[in-house]
Length: 213
Image (cartoon, rainbow, N blue to C red; front, side):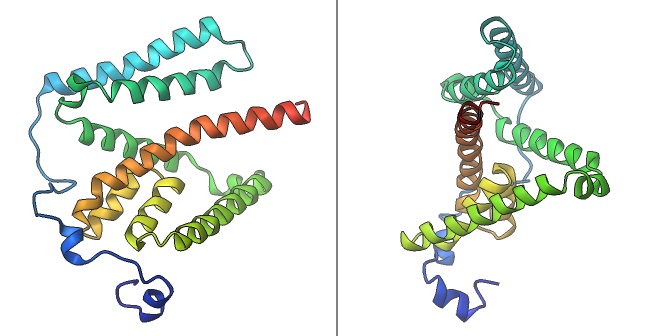
């Protein structure tokens, strides 16, 4: 829609050329066939389950009942970020594909479990609150990126990454043939999720402390 609209291009004149989006042509397709071994997948699963197990043990031993669940989430986030920097872990093939599969499986499971009648009925005010948060965050995001003259493709992927998640942003980049931005879209979502955990929990407990809940 953006590429074929003169009005949108006039409103947002900053974008990437087709050559820039395709890069040098050495980027793999998101869903392309790749090689990895059962041992590598087993190691990745062991790292994932082990991280959750260790985080749960620490949170149960260190944190009180009120902060235990939030502390567990923060520990999982922190350990995951640290482990992702280990060269041996980064060399494991299939990490991107396995992460994408688990993320999409999670989204599918949540989607099938949602009762729309109950969601829009008994939780109407929560739904309205979430809608307002997303709407005003979206508008603020557009305002800041427009003032900073950020390119359209980065703006779109960052919005998708913040509202949805990294895999969804990567899928958007892949479907639009923005090959050079697939990994960037995924990274945007991962960073948004990680920062969202820290900031979100901090804000929640700050509000709780202020109102005395």
